[in-house]
Length: 118
Image 1 (cartoon, rainbow, N blue to C red):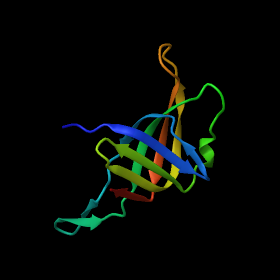
Image 2 (image 1 turned 135 degrees about the vertical axis):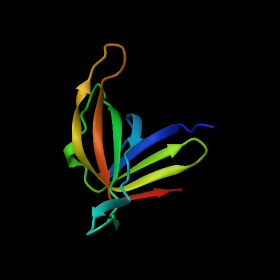
Image 3 (image 1 turned 45 degrees about the vertical axis):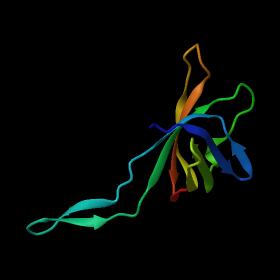
């Protein structure tokens, strides 16, 4: 059974943005291999959570992505499950993508300090 994201919401500075087409979670590095004298060891890493969202650029009005600091991103999945990212900030703002048939989209690369599933 596959799961589909039904709503993707970013809340920052009292403003809510729901103009997202998709979200893709990035890998989370848990441990890192380190070289020791005669073997390889393992070192624990502080998790860095990342999400890449595809933002649908509205025809009027423009959201300033540079102002996103300490936001909350909630991905609601069918069946009632939610994935919540806290401490969300923007790493990269991608270029607008025009295809002539669909809406204009832009890829936004986000980083978060926390992740919770519920």
